[in-house]
Each structure stands twice: as structure tokens, then as C-alpha cells.
Amino acid sequence: MSAVSATQAPAPVPVPAARARRRRARWYRQPTLLVGLTLLAVILFMCYGAPLLTSFNPDTQNLEEPLARIGQYGHLLGTDQEGRDTWARLLYGGQVDLRVAVIAVLFPFVLGTILGSLAGYFGSWVDVIVMRLIDIVVAFPFFVLVIALVFVLGTGEKSIYIAITAVGWVSYARITRGEITVAKRQEYVLAAQSGGLSSLRIIGRHLLPNVITQSIVYAMSDIVQNMLAIVTLSYLGLGIQPPTPDWGTMISAGQNFLTTQWQLTTIPGLAVVLTGLSLSLIGDGLADLLRPGTS
Amino acid sequence: MGRMSFVFRRLALLVPTAVGVTIITFFMVHLIPGNPAVTILGEHATPSAVAALDRQWGLDKPLADQYWLFIDRLFHGNLGQSLYYGTSVSSLVTSRLPATLWLLCYSAVLAVVISVPLATLAASRKDAVRDHVVRVVPMLGLGMPAFWLGLILQTWLGTRLRLFPVTGYGQDFLGHLHTMFLPSLTVAVALCPVLIRSLRASMLGVLGAEFVTTARAKGVPAQRLLVRHVLRNAIIPAVTVLGINIGYLIGGTLIVEQVFAIPGIGSLMIGGIFDRDFPVIQAVALVYGVLVVLVNLLTDVAYVALDPRVRFDA
Image (spheres, rainbow over the protein chains, first blue to last red):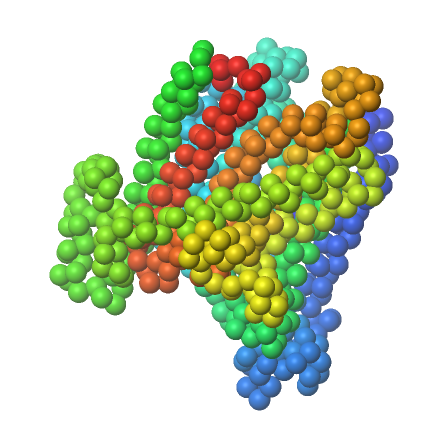
């Protein structure tokens, strides 16, 4: 949900009134942003409005109707090997995956922004330490570290958050550091410094509002990456634990029936792809909108 | 600064990173809740087995000693004993590494083969329909779970149409090329969106350069202009993008190896997770870290080798 609110109120960037007006007048003319937002709205409505769209319970097993075909026994997308309604599991599973993917973006966002702004603002040894840490974390492929950490910490949602935070903060720190290194030399910061404001106040009230947009744009693609990580972990049995419905476990459970019951695996995968597409489009549109001339 | 001293300085920068990589893999043991030896051994945790593992990893010693032991073993090429296979982890990793390297190189080549023509097509007329199509369609690849695409390709091109083998690694060179096509394609698809985007952007940048205008004024045909003048100059930033994303590429091979049953280190690691074979997981994570660091080094060196304008004071 925060993805949507984030896109509607990008950041409290202090811009001249005329530019702000132009921006407001323009956001709905960005085709990529518009298509992305619409697609995401439809997906969110389908997942969170699931009770309106299906009367089946996603967890109710019906061993008399296993592996029903599309439309059989009133099941829109058939049933899985335990007779559970695929359509219902798809909708309710989306709630779980979307929630975890969005929450999993918040912690790295905050941690990375804090570390990045400290490194960028103070420079010297703070910067050296943070940059070395970044070098070390990026030395590991994202999936390798996340999978290893979740395995070590034990399966479950909490481990997913910890693992993704431990790996994901790096990008936000890099972005924020880069932006702040440039922004801190500008006159308004020098003015604030000579006015005797504390460093924390300068970072929090003056610098961050000006540099945070890049991180917000990146957060969109980061949600996509988290989603892929969660689905992948679930596929390996390390993520969302059954019987909670989730797209990864659905793909994994359906793969044995791919030649006969193609929808069991194909449809949840398509759901992931479409959700990813909507967020990528939003990120792309936001980047165009917030950074004119660099598309 | 000369080329060689740049390479040496770049190598020196590797040292802190390499140390950090070993520290992280070392500390993985200590993140395990409770007594690591008991947790790792699971149902096989007899007191003597726990004591043996404690001794093997030095878990009864102070932390600094443990780390020193870990490093000492590492330099002797000893990555520990696999709890599941009962053999040395280093021999497991060495026997599995070629398949992973094959997959990596093959996917990188496929990604370039797919991306270069598409990016050229898009950049050849900015904001035309083909440009928009090339910009949006690959975005589908960004949110595509690699294992899902792998399963779909396996079913349709492998099982149904019988065009490609569904699993394995192949025997000889041609066998590798044939067998590894689907897995490499799966990995490449995830990489293409990023590559196409950066290549398109840098081609558009080069298209605005004065030497392009000059070439055009001299009457160089459009196609020749794009390939000989623009692409050659635009490919350098793309190499860097490929290098930066190599971690992502390598991460993608992990799960794809599992789906296609390729005997590489990725499937070794995932197998290790199912068998709760901690030394294997630790060692493979370490090898992946070293691999990424080495590839990043290679990218930097390739960058200076490709672009004569690069100065060596970076």
C-alpha cells in the first residue's frame, strides 16, 4: 500500500510554485506512470478485494476434487492437488507476497538512507567504513546472501526481513551518499551551517528532502526485486510457509503437473510478472517525472 | 600512472573486500540460533558428533582464534568436510565450478546477442513505436522469477517440442551449447532489460556527438553509421553495466541450475540447504563472493583496455 501513497506524494521537494504546478499538471500525462498505476491498482483491488471475487476459502482442502480442470466444479482456475481453489489461493497469496515485499523495502530504505547520509555528509572515516561495508556486501550475489541468511536464521517472515535488510540497504546508502556528497556543497547548506544548525538537523530537514527522490524511484524496482526474492525463497521452501498461500509455493507445488495442469504454475508466475511490470512502469514514470530531461 | 600500476592498485583494493568476504562467511556459523553444532547436526546430534564438530570448527575457542583457524584452513585450500557427502568441500566445489562458469559465460553472451540488436533498433529512431516497444517489453523480464521462466521453457521447448534437453550439462562443447541453451536463455532474460536500457541510452548519447554529424554529412550510410561509428563507442559503458550487474547475473544462475539440474555450485548450494549441509553452503557463498570480486576486477581492466581515453587516476 505504501507503494501507492509514495507515488502520489513523491517527496516534499521545495520547488518554485510554477514548477510545482507544472508537475501536478503533468503526472497524469506520463503514459508509463499511468499504465503502471492502473495495473497496480487493479492488482491491489483483486488481492485485497478477494472476498468479493471468490467465495472459496484459500485453505479449505477438498480431497474429492483434487486437480480439477479450469471451470470444473465451479472452480474458476481449477484446484490444486489438495483440492484447494487456485483462483482463491492466487488472490489471497497476492496479499501475502505484496505485503511482505513492501514491508521488506522499508527497513533497508531507512537503514541505507541513514548510513548513506552520514557517509556523504561527514566524509572521512565514516565514509571509508560505510563504503568498505558496501564493497563487502555487494561482493555477494543478492540471492546467494539472502538464501544463505534465511537458511541460517531459520525460515519465516522475520528471517526474510532481516536477510533482505542486511543485503538491501547497500543500494540506498550508495544513492543517498552520492546525492548528499554533491548537495552538501550547495549554498543553502552552507547557509544552514553558518547559521549554527546542528548536523543532524541539516541532514534531516534540509538535505534529505532534497535528495530522497532518487531513493524513492529506486524503491519501486527494489519492491520488484524483493518480490522475486520472496517468491524464490518460497519456491525453495524457505519463505512463506504452507498452508499460507503464496505465489512461490503455488509455482513450486504445481510444477509436477505442468504438462497436465499448466495453470497451476503458469498463472501465479504471470501474477508475479504483471506485478513486477506495474512497479517497474511506475518507477520508470516517476524517474521521468522527477528528473526531466534524463529519460 | 601507467596501466600496470592501475591494475596493481586495483588489486590492492581487493584485499579489504576479500577479508570482509571471509569475515561474513565466517560469521554465518554464529548467526545460527542456539548451539550451531547441535542445530547443524539436527537428528544426528550425538554428544560425540557435536564435540567433533566443535573441535573441527574450533567452536570451543575464542572468536579471534576461530577466525584465524578458518583463514588458515582457507589458505591451505581446505573448505571443510561436507556433512552430507562426507568428502572435502573443496573437491566438491572444484568439480562443480566448470558447469557454473559455462552457464555464466553463455548467459552473458546470449544477453549481449539479444540486447545489442534491440538497443540499436530502439536508438535508431528515438520515440518511434519500435523505441517504445523495445523500452517496455523487456521490462517484463525485470519481474520474472527465473525459476518460473525456466520451468515454462523446459515444458514447452523441452518436453513438448523436444527442441532442447530439459536437464543436465552436456558432454562435449557442442553438447554444452545445446544442453545449456535454455538455462542460459533464462538467466539472460533477467539481464537484458538493464543492458538494453543502458546501451540505448549511451547510443543516443553518441548519436548526438559531432563526429556522428560529420560522418552523416560525409554520406556514411545509416546502417554503417550505427554499427561502425555509434555502437563501437556506445558498447564501453555497456560493458561496465554488464560488470556491475554480474552479481545479479551470478545470483540468477543459482536457482536456474537447480531448475535445470545442472551440476554447478548453485545447485550444490541449494542441495546443501535441503540436506542442511552447512559447510557446503558456507563454502559456496565464499566462492560466489570471490567470483564476483574477480569479475568486477576483470570489468575494470577490460574498461581501461577497451577505451584508450581512460586515464589511470581512478
